[in-house]
Image 1 (cartoon, one colour):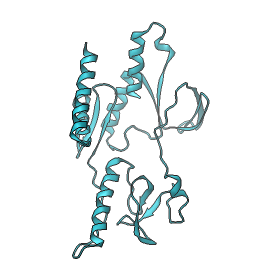
Image 2: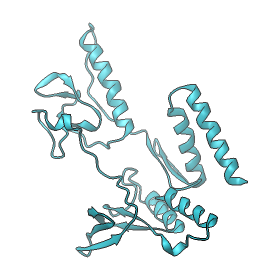
Image 3: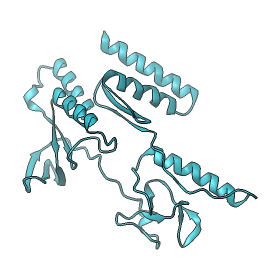
Image 4: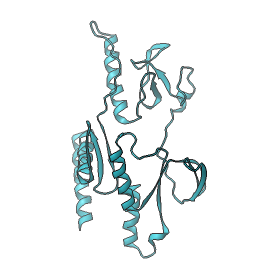
Length: 238
């Protein structure tokens, strides 16, 4: 939402055919505050203020219930009413479901269709079968469907598979370790929560860039991304 409104503002400067009152960006959020995964009200308020300064209208306690053509139906929880917004561009970034292969499997599943697994990430009725990532739901844990969850589950599964074929090694239960959450809201503004340390603004954005570069696989990719960022910064400045 932040990047989109900044892109439109840049186009506004470049062309005389586009006027500011001809477009509006909405952010619809089901929760009562933003950034629920960070679980910090101060960070949520900072994000809301950032969106306000960018010109994004944030609708909290609202839920998109239908979209047809250009009409977006939104349910307002507090007033128990339905509002309609006409939109030429609709971007859905909430909610995922398992792939069709999972839907057809005759195994125990959660309410949202994910495979239920035990603490070792195996199916209770099929201990030789592992399920991880967005397709699985650990029975005793409520986890965010993020990359770091899947990566940690992948590492544990590799360890447990190796343990099954080795003497004096034992399978380990899965215990999620939250490394943090990194978010950017437009240019040069980020909110970073790394191991409990929270940074906002330009510092938060820099941390996001740094961690992103570290996570990219391959030295060549890291170098290419670095020079792409430098080129964009120079282009924007001059």
